[in-house]
Length: 381
Image 1 (cartoon, rainbow, N blue to C red):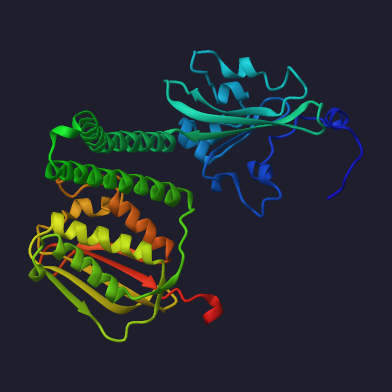
Image 2 (cartoon, rainbow, N blue to C red):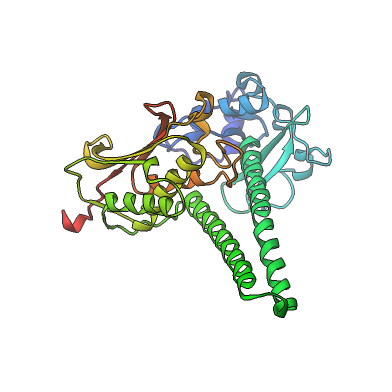
């Protein structure tokens, strides 16, 4: 490539004809062959004259304007945007005029023709800080993903508020009653009320723990403190919790396969997984709850792992609902719960490098199967 010393203005005056619009691929020069149409977000680029030189496939999808029709048009014609008050955005921002120190526009909601919202940000490219604008680079994103996130957050807040209201009302009512009328109750009545307060406080504590887990899962900050775990003993403890709580021992069938590999995992997280799956099987399922622990291969590399299957003999999960089982707020029935347990279970299993699936058990009920790699620390290998 030959490098000349003429200024851009001199070069243009020496040309007999106006230059052709540059190839849109040139816009991404230096990006290891990445073309504009490879980008997931809409990309619109205008040259120093305000003419569109790049309008990628995502921009066409978002705006419903064919890219070949947009090329060469003035930026405000190819991309007519208005703010939420109905004012023309390009007239307001004036990218080629105004202050020479401006670098662009932050992302904001704007309107396309027809009133459809789109998230728009812009960058003004200058050859030196106070020089004229050589390119305006515009990024476009649909608002659907943000709206889904906002709806999910709103649902989470509403669920938490609903779940907290009942136990907090109970705690407040019983404590106020005891404080004002302590002498009127005998010891048995006081004990009953304090046990109720303790149970409701435990429910609040569990809900707050779930919220913290969701926050850590969503942000990728869920910590796993690996230790040797006896998974067979952990299953036995959880079964005992249910039998002590009134369930018949005959309702549980535990099968431990021989030659289980040594498992390194977070014991508290394993208890969380088993507790949720067994609680679901007991509460929503019917008949015998079968828990099977067996050696397995985890991952594509064939690493040793441990497979745990929990199944029941109830009506099972409808086929059309199985894809939503591990999403937030999914409930298999109307028998209480926040609908967050299985979402957390999936996040915890994946934090260990494992996988979890749901299907129909051999006796027709729901069957959950998770596989954890042995997770042996590197310094012990």
